[in-house]
Image 1 (spheres, helix red, strand yellow):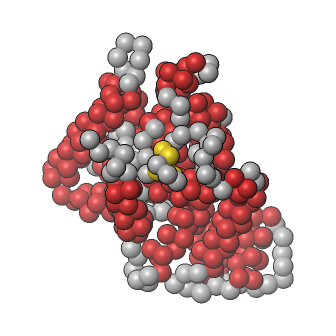
Image 2: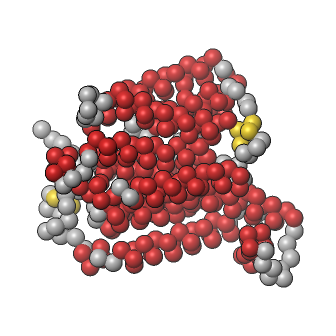
Image 3: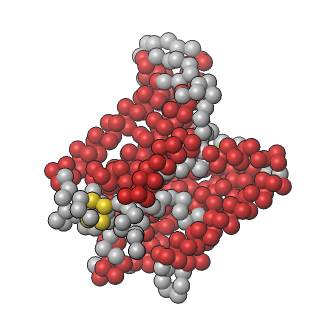
Length: 364
């Protein structure tokens, strides 16, 4: 994908025909995205198969969260729907969207590849294989409020990236090409192992397929209380790497000349991206294209400076997935469309567009 007259997407901003007036106002952009996110959260909490008025929703949330009473009455069923089911799911969608979009920014910046997404280096394969293994061992962690599957998916995503990194490392260096090839090989191997396990255990086939199709199942407030800090810490850690990622836009040699520890930065970026992706898939399954589409769309507004691109993508990913999950809930209500199907319907055409728009850049 190119900007203007053949200017590469990843090049520094100096001398490019950007909408500079807009991009010099990062507070305005972030405030706008935050307001859109707040509006999306309100709409997604308000709408559902069971109607609950906005004043009752506000009263329930204020009473349960802050102990403030508005003098409005509601039924136990309405309180259960809003506080135990709908609100955790909406907030879970926002967390997953922000985590995947942030991870997408990290991997695209590190690999300098517009086609990179959070699942590129084996995270999806590792999470899916570990989740399949966990489904064969139906253990429930009552103390922390969810089953073995989310924990296994998180550890599988994180572990697979570390394995890929170790395979790709040659001496003291980790070439980007080797990372991509190792990630592809690891993903293929883990996908084959997952399919083999599914054939051996037909009873888990449907559950595994549903998990790989994606869907927000936060498991209530207990699970969110564990996942949310991981995602917030991951996004904060990612933001601390934005200056070095800006240097990576110039290439590894130039980044090293600017004082960046290139190999250390690669490892940190991979670990942070895997942490964000693992935390996301632990409550959502495999939700594709968020980490690919959102950074590109936000980059059209903010430009390639990661100091603005990353927080803006986190906010945009949050409201995008909140609205996508709302669409998945309502379009065929009372039945639901898997969330991964909805994001694929949006992301796949965009991916084709990227391929078409970048064909001249990669033509021989």
